[in-house]
Image (cartoon, one colour):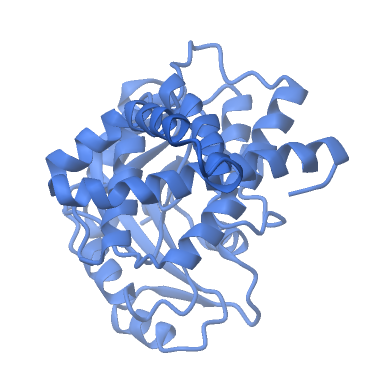
Length: 333
């Protein structure tokens, strides 16, 4: 019997979280006869393959590491379901996650792909993991339900749509940008991408300061280039009206304020009044997110987050500058 859904899980040295991920997938309330689970082992050097074998799912072992885009494409090529679902190895789904995703296609005929969001709760109690997870949840909740944005960590797509756009671009090496690129190409074909805010999954990723800054900087540069390239090509998303993006004017205005505040510390150390005014402006532009953090984790957590918000805004600002430079010079992502 041909399965309705093929669940593809790309993995590389994922022994820490893979068992939790697979256990959640196999505990789904979605009929076992209507799904197949394929783990694509991207040349892991740890016990990832052995863990996958214990669950009895199909395993594709790649002889060399190629990255998640290539692994997802290989898994999709070997799969047979009418719908292809992608789940990252550090994601724990709920019992009704698969059912909710597949039922989302009933909302409209032109939906090509659906994705879910990160839950507010994070099992790792360190500050950065809690902060980043809440930020990702907050950002996703502010996004419109229909847009050209896509997150491959937890998504489902019609096989016909996936084949039409040629799958993921395996030439993109910046992690988490390949799904943005895929979403852009899906939308350019007139398909709608639906974000189902009722689908919340647990994200197990452990964040560290330097790795977070490095990864975010790379993603922001690549994301900026994709936006500039899309605008240059004048791609249209769809005949359907697309709602506004998640980045409102307060987020955008806080970027130059962060840069000016940083510059004032370096070049105008005696201008206390100027620093105070900029600091108050910065807090005002980020008050909604800070209020969200206070509601979820308390005042002390939100106070600790101010410095991280400032650093991340600087990160984004410098990344945008690099993206513009690379775009003008015609450099590829």
